[in-house]
Image (cartoon, rainbow, N blue to C red; front, side, top):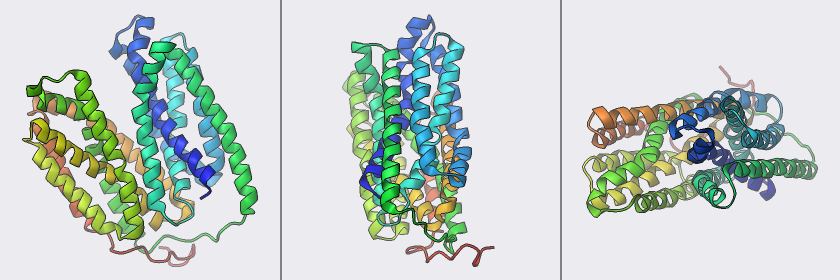
Length: 394
């Protein structure tokens, strides 16, 4: 893959997550302007997160039916315009409408961008790992970006600026696409069918995505509060606890690159088994850990959780034909985003009524054990050579 295309796809992943989290990050500032509470303003973003999941499926289908390059152009320019509209809103219903548009355009990236990152064979795992780190950095940048604008300008100006930058990125993407199409000569490869083990692999991917998505969101959402509870004897400030959580996130995020390189060189199955079995063990240890031991265990948990991310995407890339890939990625992310959304109220219920975080860690450890048993069903080695479309399909 040409470096210029890969760079734009990486930037796209970063702004996808950055833009989705900007309004939640700015809700406290906007609440003052609208004469509302933080909670009231935060609920206005609900439509964007629903659209983010629901529209993944049609966006993947549209990209496979037409052009991924075109859909990425729609992503950059569309989400940029939606961010500008959000910055210009004057009424609450306008915020809801504008943010829903943000979620709708943001839904394009995962089924389309990841299908493009995985195109062309070669070091697919490494590319997906690097791309995943860019997405995580977008998450980390959301609060920082809003903090800077809160000090020097305003929340509306933040939306207007990043929206304009996204539109310019869309124009740049169009130029890169034209240039690479000319260099490539427009040659098309003969379509191929799925690998012989594709059904078994997709079942494993769907199960591990569903259960793993819950574990991932439960850990990323609850970690700051977990550390706050388990480090209570050290009288740390909220800023200090938040800084520790940020260090844990950042250090774990780069595991995706390491795992991506490993699965390019070695069989995925033993690496996948080691990661999910390690999750089960460390999550069980977290049930009763406290103090700095909890911080160490949290690092191991997050390293193992983040390390799993490029594996499912690489399995899809290796075992399915390119023509199907966008739709399969879209199904995967609809499942992942739906289950991830369910993790938040589940954490709240367990924390308030069912024993707190020890209960959460116990259930998460059991879930990781189930994933381990599921991964054991994966075929060993690398996929067999795909058959031509129409040959051997059933």
